Image 1 (tube, rainbow, N blue to C red):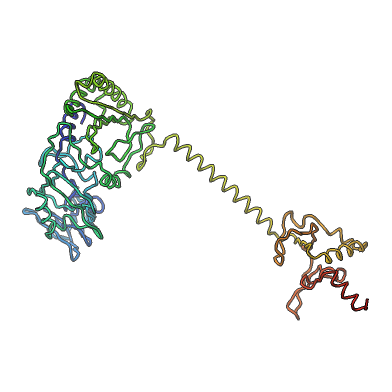
Image 2: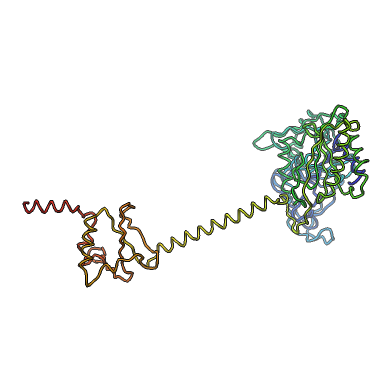
Length: 513
């Protein structure tokens, strides 16, 4: 609701208590309770699953078959009836009859889900389209909770929660804290308000006390425990904001485009006087301000919050600037009109063009969000490049184009013998076979018999990929093509290589020197 009428409803309903009506039910004729989005009719087979609440049939209907679980229950209204038939219904309101239709309103909807409540004037009124914060949509300390007549329902009161309302009315029965507790123990009450599993069920306190504070009364729903539960349902529904840097009001789960003013006040403050003054001196001065939703409220901290919002926030920011200037003028005059003592404000950024998609579940991305995404993509690309380089290097290093062997300096006699043998091989010129790179570039492998040593020889030797490696059938071994008759004295078994000085000593002792 817009303009003056909205302001009048807001200040009295939001700030001093209102009636909140439960909108969910388990009625047979409610199309939202059935798979496929339509109520059963004609020759449909109706299936009520296990652990379903009571299904209330309030109209005359016809079906082919009704499948009930052992603990299922169907209640007929005083003037309703059910006929069983195999004839298809060709009426326009019964398309595609003859199907299996399953009841889907099985789980009890949560008391703390704002979508399950609406504000109404009295028991017969429909829901009013009043802009509210999420915490204001749930019945609060000074609100009346009403479950309308003619409907069966099931409501989850949560676990370990303390819920306080002014009054509780179920159908035509008004309850107190004690009588409501007794009702929950009955068979009917257990179905309507099922107990929490593995936890203590929420407790409802009915205080039956109206708001008499001229500064307004807080709902109590903006406190952390309840607010966290409310936002479990509301945050996934948050629409993408049409402004930069949307702001977060207290008692609301989604950021908004617009402005938030927070006020403290003196002993003579009157919330109704403030709202009427804002309406007369600011909101009524500009016709386009009718597009702005002004949501007043008192927080549990005792402060007054004024929330102004519209689609992109531009008009709301203009209105907020004028309201702020109007209130600040009174503060400068010692608060003679409103008795406001301090004021703080925050506003969203500039409007942005509406997105083509219908994204929900998060607010718009800020500049920091975009920078973070770009940085993340760049870091991921860098990691991918590094992994590719490592993979290519390893694949090239494990090729079969040739083998590289290194001799170790811890065998000095072996090294000297090899060098002496190479110098004496003029015809074979074995030294020409000493190469820096073997095979296709960097393909090589380390000898697993020897670990890394600081005494690695710089010389490497080639085994030609074409060398014929013959296996000995008798011994089950293979012959090393490098270990031929020409250099047999060079490639001894390393385990049998002895120190040259020890060999010389043995020879001297043998010769009697």
